[in-house]
Structures are given as structure tokens and as C-alpha cells.
Picture 1 (cartoon, rainbow, N blue to C red):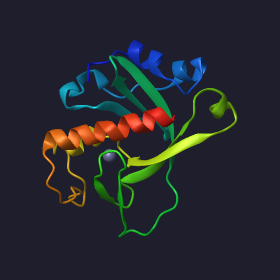
Picture 2: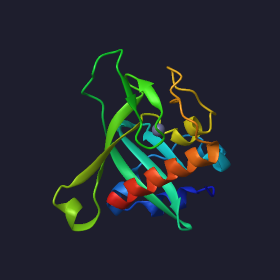
Picture 3: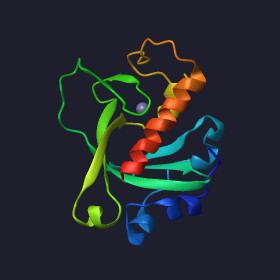
Length: 163
Ligand SMILES: [Zn+2]
């Protein structure tokens, strides 16, 4: 993706109010992000761990969504869960249900959409093998790297479209 500035980030959010957008905490050191390896910039709010954000580039403009992280529903320490964007398998705690309030009238009525995502939101890096899950989370499959990246991006845009 193209590098984003703090202004880009604050202007990109589609599912929160102007006030919330102004208050949210920027990701630490995000200007140093490996942009060429990112399909989206994702981060947990340093001051509020139950909040997470992701900003993606869609058709040349930036789209950001605010997420609520649900940490409960532990299914045991040995269970493994899969991220629905990058399909990385993680052991307990590596994946969390994140819900986004929907935009417009649906959101005002309290509707949200949820997905299981890597808790560190580093999907782009897992897909490219730049970061490894604790349990060597790559699933065994024969797709090439460009195919895996394309699939992750398709999953990402499908999620954004539902918000
Ligand atoms: Zn992921």
C-alpha cells in the first residue's frame, strides 16, 4: 500500500464519529512501516487494548475501520484458530473476534459485523512469511505468494464491504 500520514489515517475512518476519529491513538512508529509488504495498516490502540483499527487502500483512497476486540470465549489453551483474512493458524490468543460497527443507518441501529483476525493485525506479514505465528501457523497448501496475497486482499475488501 501507499504510505499513509496521520492526516490520511484520521480522515479515512468510515464507521466512527469525527470526535472518535480525532481521539484515536496512532500506531507506534507507523511512519517506519514496511509499506511495500502491507495490504493494510492495522494496530491495537496503545491506550485502549479493546480497540483496534485498520486502514487499507481501496481504489486509490484510504478506508479505515474501527474495531472492538472480544478477547473472551477461550476455547482452551491448546485450541487453534484461523484468521479469516490471512488464514494463518494461531494458538490461543493469536486470533480474536473483532467487530466493526456498520456505517450509516445500520450502525445507528447497533448493527455490527465481526471477523476472527490476527490479534496483532499483522496479516500482511504472516502471508509473506515475514512474521511467523507461534505454532508455525502456515496452513499446508500449494498457492504461490501472489495468490495468497490476492486472497488476503479479497478477504479484506469483502470484510470492508460489509461494514
Ligand atoms: Zn491474519
